[in-house]
Amino acid sequence: MKKPADGPKGAPSQRQLRVGEEIRHVLAGVFARHEFRDPTLAEAEITVTEVRIGPDLKRATAFIVRLGRTDVVELIPALKRATPYLRGQIAKAMKLRIVPDLSFQPDTALDYAMEINRLMHQPVVARDLLAPASED
View 1: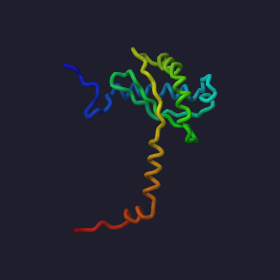
View 2: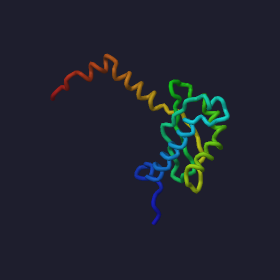
View 3: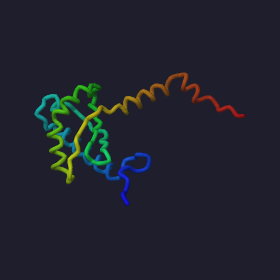
View 4: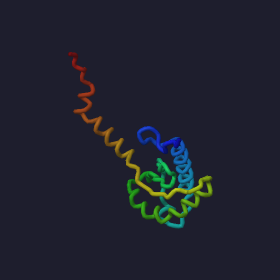
């Protein structure tokens, strides 16, 4: 009997989570050492917040943020050019049969959380949160 690649309701398997976290760790180390020929990447302070990997472990999406700046989208073309180098670093650090193809996306989770926080602190919402619940 064949085991499904994804867990219940499309959740990532334990192997996907482990491989994704290890790739995140390798990429974070490369970005911290600034080992790039491209001056755009060599000067950038990049943090990898998450790596999601497909069920077949052939494709990985790294979510990145630029510390102290919001122009992370401008780094995506440079990261695409550096992908072969980054895949080589992953291959050296990990024992995988196939090194996954990398793609990069800006991580917008923090921006979203800050927007929700701003909305929750508006006077109208705060008033509704502090109002006693009506009993029927």
